[in-house]
Image (cartoon, rainbow, N blue to C red; front, side):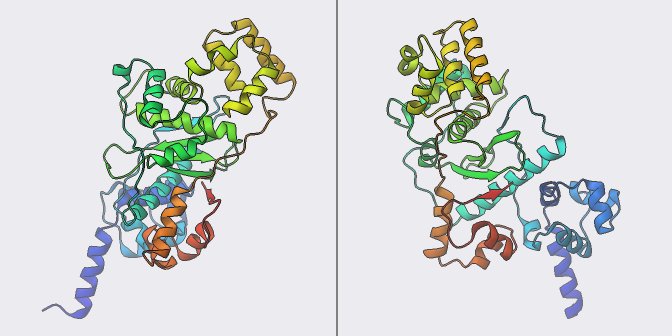
Length: 365
């Protein structure tokens, strides 16, 4: 019969063997720390740490404790069975270059948020009026046709979409407004192919104005419904999808003739998209010439409208994730400690991020 000490030791070893190596990578990259840097911080050789992260070596308990303390994660964080997924789309202004380490940090953080949402959704089923489904671009022919099909399936009325966030949440999607800490990134989305129970998750910068938030979410929406298979130019296709989704050609076309900045401002207030997007739409639908388009763009630049347009559109506030948290707290009687454990957070981290009231929820990425 095993002694108590030997039984405890074997139980501890079995627990450590259950550590998910992907969570080691996720925690490190979300802190923006390179593998060699972490090796120096925790006093573990680079080769050993590399084998821990690749799953080739079972991590020692004392090493896990050191890593958890260095990366400020509870031990429960490293036992989660989730996976790291690439983003369905990473939308950023092409004139800006995002360093590789920063991209890894952002991707790691959105994976953390997705895993947190996934943990909570196991205990709070979402009932939605609509649903997400993947569209077959070769069958539909164009991103514009796909956007029209989705508007029809979601029974969106003619004219401008009142709230893109509401439309996504009404189909069961989850939207986070995040502080990306990098002005080059506007939005990211994820919808894992091998996790049928997880709805699409959208992350949009809280620093962008409302018109750009709506465009970014629509662009990411194009990615999640269209790009489950590789295509030739996914970014251009997502832009075309967003343009038709927000401004259907049959409805806006005649309003784009003889475009001026004054007219663009009027249409912005109605369609709730940027003047720049409206002017571009006029060119794409051949309602203005390429020369007239360039003239309008130069006028926009000279007036400073490229950085700050008139007629600000207020941002749209997500509600679904905060509602899930509220249901778990009030109806399922989950304590903050329970919720923090479920989400792989220290209790102070949970309190700082989510607090006791969820209106205007903000997340730092």
